[in-house]
Amino acid sequence: MRPAKQGESWKKSLGTAFLVASVVYCVVWGFRGAFGRLRSPGCSGKHALPTSYTLPSGDKIPSVALGVWRAEKGKVGDAVKTALNAGYRHIDGAWIYGNEAEVGEALKESGVPREDIWITSKLWNDFHAPEDIEPVLDESLSRLGTDYLDLYLIHWPVAFKKGKIPREVDWDLTNNSYPTWQKLEELVEKGKIRNIGVSNFNIRRIQNLTANPLKIKPVINQVELNYWNPQPELLKWSKQNGILLEAYSPLGSAERVKETLQVPEVKKIARVLGITPAQVYISWHVQRGTAVLPKSVTPSRVEENLQITRLPEHLFDLLENAANSHKPVRSVDPHWGVDIWH
Ligand SMILES: NC(=O)c1ccc[n+]([C@@H]2O[C@H](COP(=O)([O-])OP(=O)(O)OC[C@H]3O[C@@H](n4cnc5c(N)ncnc54)[C@H](OP(=O)(O)O)[C@@H]3O)[C@@H](O)[C@H]2O)c1
Image (cartoon, rainbow, N blue to C red; front, top):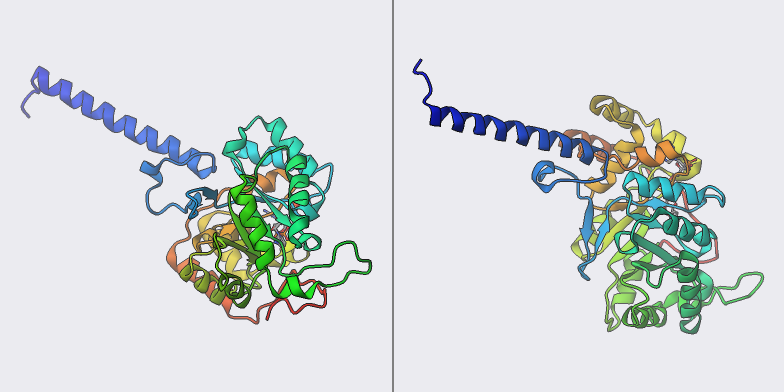
């Protein structure tokens, strides 16, 4: 072998140093990416699951949120702080959850800049009348300690007459959400909301709404999506129509989570990939092209739920087929005298 000249050995050392540095960089970024804090576009590559979706407004909504429905007072604040510390930047709340003040306090105490966090709230059924919307939105803003929401959703396609006990359905506003929507558009123009959408709307209801001359189209529909109720037709139609679905009750909600985590196909996928069944589901949701909103007030689970990974195609298909091969069952199905789902 020919001894290397001085110049060549210098180049060789530089090359080796570059190689070592690249490997270290990718390992470190890969490690941090795996824990959901940061992702390097260079190393996570096209095979990583999306960490956010870009909406027509140009805003980027993080793909995984902490859901706070039934996150009890006294626990929800710590859950929010744990989540932000673990790398979440998306909190899914609602006026009706009754915990916005504690969420707001935790957001402030976390020290994470407001503009780095995606905050969603929802308009409750009692307040669909246009004149009732801004006051209740202001209440949410003040409790959350912010002057704008990233996303405000019509929580249900059901309007109640305000202040009636027992509850009375307002059929005009239930059958026609346009007056409510027009007010939301006005509040976007006023700068109190950045994006608007709906929740629990089926295709027919979205079409009824979008048949009006809207200034802003609904960009998001938050619906139940899980192993028991995977809604493949709604998912396909929403993608074709530029509406992002958000998967609520992604683990089957509190009543079914144990059973959900025991599904044999999911246990198998978890074993093969060395991840937990909850991580399999949360990854599956993002891989289906939806945002996902797992709720937990348990610190280890909050952290666990952010660590998602792309499932190999055959394992993704295994779960997709299993979820689609039984009769769909809803976990959240309130009975208010309105046929919500048809
Ligand atoms: N728009 C709507 O009408 C609507 C309706 C329902 C829900 N949502 C949104 O969706 C969010 C999530 O839905 P959800 O709360 O019904 O149900 P979910 O997220 O499917 O399940 C929550 C349950 O799973 C448990 N859990 C969470 N992570 C776990 C893990 N890694 N391992 C084992 N158990 C785990 C939680 O327990 P711990 O908390 O005790 O850890 C809790 O009991 C809500 O918080 C809310 O933001 C919206």
